Image 1 (cartoon, one colour):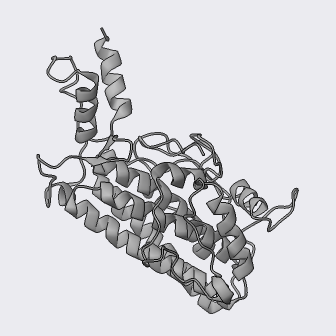
Image 2: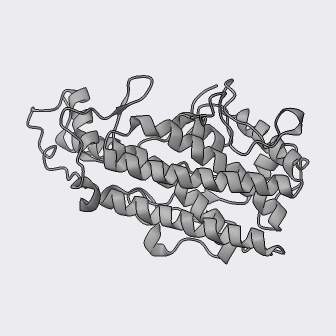
Image 3: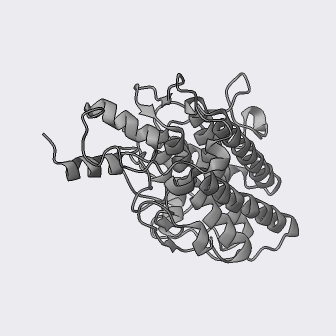
Length: 325
């Protein structure tokens, strides 16, 4: 029914790992049919340091989303890698005046360029040191995930650090139509830009964690989640200490308007003027966002789309579309 070349192309485009390809073949009814080229498609598996240390059990299924879709660990980590590229570029430019090196951006799919970004003229040594420390962490996250994914890692997608921040600031009411917002202009703007990212990263890793089946990958994701939470708490407390709580609350409200009717976001100001260092539910548990909800935020669009905002050409990998709200 399908030509061999078409089948191989479909497999390649729909899959990032051997597990993905096997799921595709089972779903399409192609497994065991001797389709030429199907068995020869390379798995391009994760690096031996991860794949061999704790391989998934044959009886253990891949992660399953709420709608029953099977999803592999590598697909999840590649989704996270897109977000880490964004954070690493933002913080690296802010702290050091340059982005990721060429050796840290290649991979599967098209490698995109970064628009915007410059070194922040910090006046406070404490804020500068925070920026430098987080920048080192985010670059390390990129390197770590790329090493873990090996030959199935995705390339850095096209990233916009100019118009995206202006659109977000306008949505939050921080600037008026026709004005622009540059998170690299000064340290106060930098902190607000950082706040836009950090809570999203925490909720993204929290939402993805239950879908990861390989314990070694799960341990890695949990470790990065902890770091993102440390970063978020630091940015939050610094904003409050500098009197920027109202602006941060406005960003939180705008961010929460993008990912559906459920309240998955909290600003830095609680009831009776209390400070919210760690947003979460009444049990002290951090919120989770689905892949689609995360993309709603970074695409700056509450509808179903596959590009926009910080990723004007979309993200790389199998998970590309935001949810419709």
